Length: 86
Image (cartoon, rainbow, N blue to C red; front, top):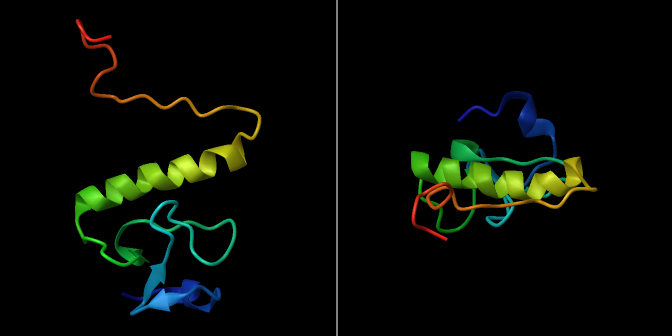
């Protein structure tokens, strides 16, 4: 993987992948986030599904930085709007 200019940003790297906290997708530099093939953490599965999950985890971590005055309202999409479910 070619990181281009990103390689000079002082990020912790593992084989040209950015090491991130798996709970937030944040690397060792504040204000940045990495998901998908470029992100790395122990036990990561390189699947498209993993990238979708990482996007949700990063969004959850970023939300209070963008909207500090708002509470994040999180719903399970599989149960929202389904007739007969509470």
